[in-house]
Amino acid sequence: MAEQEIIFTLYALRNPSIPNAIRYIGITSQPLRERLMGHCCEKSHLNPYKFRWIMQLKRQGLKPELVPLIVGLSQSEALSLEVEMIRDFKQAGHRLTNISLGGEKFMLGRKMSRKARAKISAAGKRRFLSKELRQRQSESEKRAWACPELRARQSVSQKARWTPEARAEAAVRTKKRFESPEARAKLSADSKARWPEIKDRIRASQLGRKQSPEAKAKISAARKKYFQSPEARARQSADIKKHWVKRRMKKKTTQLMLNL
Image (cartoon, rainbow, N blue to C red; front, side, top):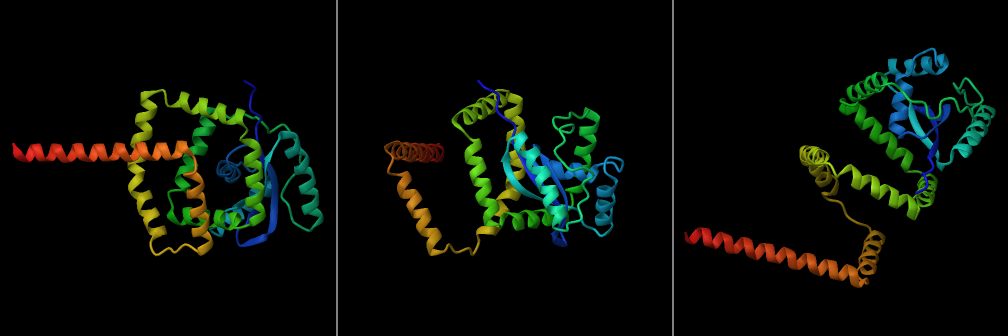
């Protein structure tokens, strides 16, 4: 099976209090939260201009906001677009803290030591213990995803990325991960510990919420389309029968116990 191509994202850093002022352009194949954490933990000698800007934000109780610009890029596309974006933003008057013209490959694929990864992980966990920080991060991401153009680009890139081969590889990796009883037990324990909080958040978000006529029509059409499939109807029927068998068995067991 062919090796899956690494997907890159072109992103910008900005001051959350001045969202129209871009201060850094970069590319990454990491999850965006991890890349932002890397910027915030970077040493001053790597990029003193960006370091001073981030420290200034921290003294104000802020942190850089990472905004994805283009997602689903190959390495060559990302390197080329990084150069173009840095040039375009500088010409537009943005005071970028990039120390190069972009397009360098020396950072791509760099592996950090276990000690460095552990240090970054511990710093990130400490920062996200703050409810205020998590709230700001949530609001920042909601603002970014409120952009229709960003959602459209993300949709196109994800559809292009998840080819049948990519889905098959992901399925194999997931199955291999959960072959271990220890991994399954750990996931189960984590899910049980987090579920009460998640359930409360879901309940709070749904209370008093009213769907628009357009949303109701869309949901209705999706359900009707789903049940047009004989396989879907068969699965639904089997699930209902299984549910009622369990319910009748439970009722019989309860009656037997009461009669003892």
